Structures are given as structure tokens and as C-alpha cells.
Length: 485
Image (tube, rainbow, N blue to C red; front, side, top):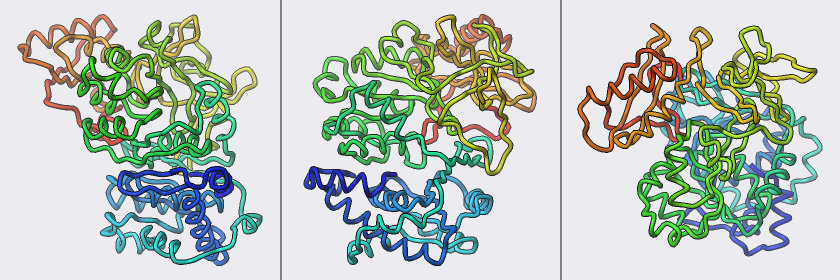
């Protein structure tokens, strides 16, 4: 999360400024430093008998989680969350493959305590926070010399199976934070909203950036779009990251005539992960102004391209260009670079790239002396070096098609509210689920979709009209395991 040294620096500079606000409680930078210091003291006692202390957490977003996470960072203890929707069997598999020594649970998930106790030590975060409030430790910085080298774990979404574990031995925070802060003029006066689940690396990454600046971070758990709008308005949020799913709900809920009055503080909203359709980008900027930014990246490679609002108007179907320290190559089946506008696999060279997977094989290649990580995504680059995605997390046995292009075109239809295109790995058939704004006969909808898909090179798509699409908290579409997403 963020180390004690950084917290204490802000505690000295502005002790009474609010550091964390979860809607029920607020803590100042001074109290944040004291609690982090005390928890680090508690944990360092444990480290004397357990030098291989590693931990994961199962928790919704909370102030307790941020404080415990800060103490973990202070002591260089790997600490990453797993999706609290995962079943116990999957969580146990992750614990086993990572050789995790401790699992930290939020109180609402204490029903998992007994089952997980059979494979590791389980700790209730509420107990840790209570002890931290009762005890007092000296400054923990003197204990840091005994800690091991930097280690970091992060999890892929796991929507098509057990999440992969990405492992890193180098922190990239300072370089990325300095670049983004300079590019977007982030300041300590910003009020940043964390509404993506903190088990998602993007949520914690952007939160760390603003905490490092001494900003106030508002911690929120997504309930619905009205609730999210209320937080943006009532807390005078200036910056946030959210999934396209969350952004879509906000855009549909707000009135273009009042948006600038109700969200006048909001100046930077970045989105990514799932395809952010052209229709959504345009609607969002119409209602909120030119404050919508987009990124492309993966758990394994960090944030690799950025698309600013002025670029979104010019190249709306793109996810932006690579920036400082990142290089994107489009490669063929022989791992050779392709020409512009040719579709192939996306390979990333970045200082943010993981070292390896702990529970799967990763593919690395060298191009012009640089080491690239080959992703499972497909796309192409324009002559001006903008990246266009066509399919994310494609199975290698399936020929890539411009499914995202179909999705963008279908959502432009006035009668369509939302859409998702996917391919079945069992028979290679194409499917699209659509949500309608208003009634149109199925035959008319299907004819429109078949024309669009044919224009994009897909001859037959099975159309399903549905009431809604089933999203994960981070904006992924939930599909059966036989479906490639």
C-alpha cells in the first residue's frame, strides 16, 4: 500500500489533514502514522519467528485494509488481495501454490476462518486494528534492515479459471508515479476516490500514487450508480479510476444540464480493463466534459498505453499510445513484428513487466534487443502508433477477430444499451449478448448485427437479447469457463 516513512512525512507536514475517509470514519495523517507504526510493531514481532511471512487478504475496501496494508509495505511483506467472490477451493489452491503463510480476513468473511485455518494461519483484521489502538511501539524503521528483498504478487482476474499469480522483484512505483503526476498535474489537494475493489492492482496502484502525494483518499465499495454519483458529489472527488461498467452507470444516471454543477470538482477519471466503447466515451465526455482518460495494460505488464481526452475525440476506438518506458509490438504466430494495421498478438516491453508467473508458463521474446512479454490479447497499431484492441484474452487455438470492433459498432445502434461479443472455445462459434434501450423485433436486431459482424470479417454471430450483462466488481463479464474472453 504505502510505507510508514511516507505516511509520517505527511503526518509531520499536515498532521490534522484527513488522510482516509470511508464514509463512516475519517483518520488524519497523524493517526494514520500512529496506527501503521503500531501494526508494523506487532507484525515485526511475528517476523522474528517467521522470516517467510507472506500474506493475502480477503476484504472489501475499508480503512482497516489500507492501514494493515501500509504496515505490511513498511515491513516489505508481500500483501495482495484475492477476489472475495472466489470459492474456498480456489482460494485454497492459491494459498497452496503461493505458499502463503497468513490470510487476513475482514469480519464479514469470518465464515471462511475455519476452512482456511487448515492450510495457513488466519488473522482477523479487526483484531489487529484493535490491538494497534491499544499498544504503542517505537518507530519501526530500525527493524527494516532485516527484511528480505522486494517481492510483489498480483492476481489476474481468473474469469476463465484459477487466477494466475504474477511475481515481481522490483518496484516500479516511483518512476510511474513521477511521470503520471507530472503529466496530469496531480497534487496533495486532490481528493481521490477508490471504488474499484482493492484486490485489483489498478485500485491499489492509483491509491498509492495519491497517498504518496499526501492527498485525501475516499474509500468506497460500489453498490450502484446512484450511490457512486452521491460519493462523487458529496465528497468533492477530483480524481478516480473506475471500470467502464461503473462509468456507464454514472453516465446513464446524470443529467447533462446538471452534471457540471454536481460534479464540478471532478477533473480526472481514468477507465480501462474491459472495452470502453466509443459510445460510452462520447456520452461520458458530453456529460462530464473532457476529463475521461483511458488506459490499456494487464496485471502482468502494468499500465502500458494512455489515451487523453483530446486523443479520444480524434481516435475514439483506440486505447492510446505507449508512453515513457513502454513499447508495444504486434507480432505474428512466429513472434515476428507485423506492419501497421495488421492484427496480431500484443507484446509488451515495460519496466513494469512481471518477472514470471508462479503457477503458469509465461512467454517472453526479444525484439531489437528488448525483452517483451507476450500477452493473450490481440490488436493492431495505426501508422501514428495508436493501439487498437480487437480481442482480449483470446485462446491461442482461435483465430483472432475484431470482436471489440463489432461491440463498438453494435453499441452505436440507438436501440442498444450494452453489448458483449465472445467466442466459444468448444466450437469456435461467435456470440453477442445485447441489452436494448427499447423494444425492436428480434429479427431486425439480428439482421443489423449480422451486417455489422460481416463487415468486420465475422460471418455469423449468435444473437441473444438479455435484460442485463453480468459484470464482476472490476468490470469483467462473467461467462462460462468454456468461453474465451
